[in-house]
Image: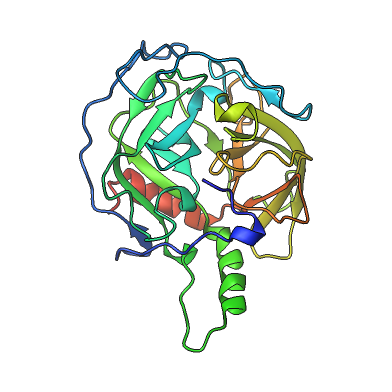
Length: 298
């Protein structure tokens, strides 16, 4: 799943009617496969689920990023969002049963369908083909503004501009079938310019083939796009697969209300600004969507 470089703008999503949100009908997944001890480190899932190739060696990647430790905070709340045979993204818990990712990660980019085969899985603490718990969606939702409305006589250039502006809404939430066994991120909305730096997290394909969670630190910048922020981390490989991974303020293995604050997430970038990621700055609408999703998407 691309994090949306400017030459490959994210396709619009098909909206299913909802009270201010795009959503799918609640569904009931099968029981978890390959689950391990509660709160434990990722384990080898054997042959019971995806990622059965076993542990591998991380690639060298860039010297700007570091391989993260999913056994410790905050990356123990992060995992791989997977639709087998289609795409992979990054996601993480932000509430006991709510997982946050990018809006462009929950629907097919060509048809707008919300995983019609109902095969989506969230693999908590994914690392080298191992995970601690497998979760399945009960329902998913994202702001309806994420898909800009096509207007009569609208040019392709105007539509692409509207799509870029819609990235302020490029986040989605998933109610999963079980509570997190490791906890969840803090988050903050309407922070404006109160934060100066953050750590991007995710599973970028161009670093160690997306087999390990990565962390890369950078400077936060406000942009001319409403409620869109930039993170200048200098790593041009932090793209596909990292989509949906949160940018963390006060990244720390020590837990507490002021540490590990989700400020934005990996959404898109521009080809002429390699090493700079863009994402939505959460607003009050973020909290509204969280309440909506936690309530069963209703």
